[in-house]
Structures are given as structure tokens and as C-alpha cells.
Amino acid sequence: MSMENQRIEKSQPTEPPLMARLLSRAMRTKPLFQTALWTQMPLLAMISPRVTDLDARHCAVEIPFTWRNRNIFGTMYFAATMMAAEATTGGLVFFHQAARPDKSSFIVRGISADFVDKAQSSVRFECRQGDVIAEAFDEASRSDQRVERTLEVVGWREDGTEIARVNVDWSWRGR
Image 1 (tube, rainbow, N blue to C red):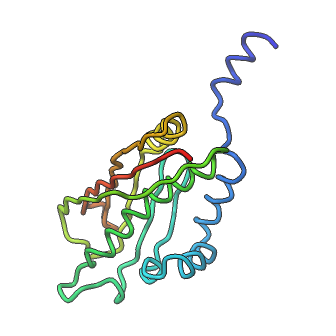
Image 2: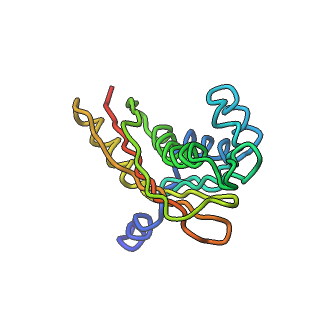
């Protein structure tokens, strides 16, 4: 193989493993995702989240503004927004877990948020730190120590107004 062909092959992105692709597809298919939520996380299922994007780099979750998650002040409940923000990072973590041959345990260790505006419509939360998660999995597999990372999630209303910045603290340990 010539040097030119080797350079071209290295510059092209590699496709994620089959399990990661299947997980991404299942999470983006609303009936499959809702069924999984009702069996594993019924409280999250109540707010009807929808995973719109999920790949190695980022995850986006939308939640509709309905009577189930609206409080008496006409805004979305704090709990609904926090569940969606945590689910956004969780989607990325599960994607990277599915892409790896070795397994690690992981858990949310903390969460903090800065709410900058009211959530008075459907909202979209997005995390773009897949590279941080991949690095954490790699580090956890090489060490027997816990690896901790803080992932930032940004939430927007339908009109594009930022409503919140949420920091979710995750911890990994290799098995």
C-alpha cells in the first residue's frame, strides 16, 4: 500500500463498533427507547424524552412541555430538566461502554446546575464531551483507581434561548 493510501485511510473516521451503532439506533427510535425507559426508569419515561442525536462525540435529548412536567408557575419542573440533562450524559456514557470490549462500572457522583432562564416550552439538552468520556474509560481500564470527570450539558428552549448549564460528575472504575 502506498504512503498516500495510508494517509487517506488514517484521516477517514472509523465507524463505531456494531453494539454502539445498535444502541444509538435503539435510543433514537422512540418506541424502543420508551419501552426501555418504562421497564428500567419509569419516572424518566413519564416526561417522554426523545434522543435526537447520539454518536461518539455528542448526545442531544429533547423533552416536550406538557401537563406532566409543568408546574403551577407555567414553567417546567426542575426535576424534569435535571432528568433530561443527566440522561444526555448517560446516553454518551452508555454509547462509549457499548463501543468497548472491556467493561467498566460507572456512576453519577454529583450534579449542579445554573439556571439562566425559564423553561416555558419544550427544551433540548446537549452534551458534546464524548472525547472526555472515551478518555475516562481508557484511563479506568488502565488503572484500578476511580476516574472522575465533570460533563457539561447545555439546555435551550425551542426559540434558542439558553435555559441552563448543568454539570454532571461521573465516576468510572475498571473491572
